[in-house]
Image 1 (cartoon, rainbow, N blue to C red):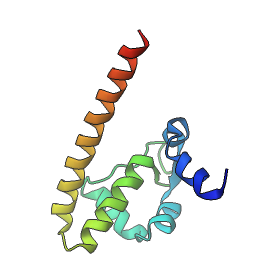
Image 2: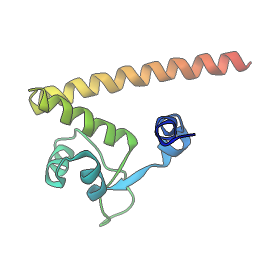
Image 3: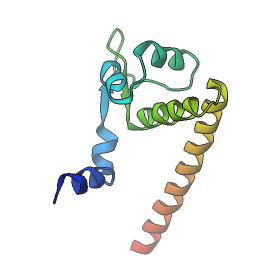
Image 4: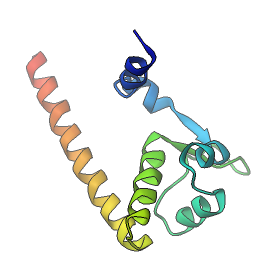
Length: 111
């Protein structure tokens, strides 16, 4: 398996994605969004860090990283932060509904 196939297949590793939690510095490096901006989005309730105790470094999971990337993309396309956040919230809701249906269909097919 070449590197491109490995990179594509990692998105299918739901167990890995559910465990993926990284610090705010890493998220900033990965996404290109400054830490200060990430904190601001958190203050506005757009993203939520994973709670791991008081006084620890902010950490974010895969879904929050995805939200950050989507918001960044929409901001670059000319959306306001509020409009981008609303659009991302709608997208995430749609994605969750699709995955729930897929999960239910998969469970019914196993029976």
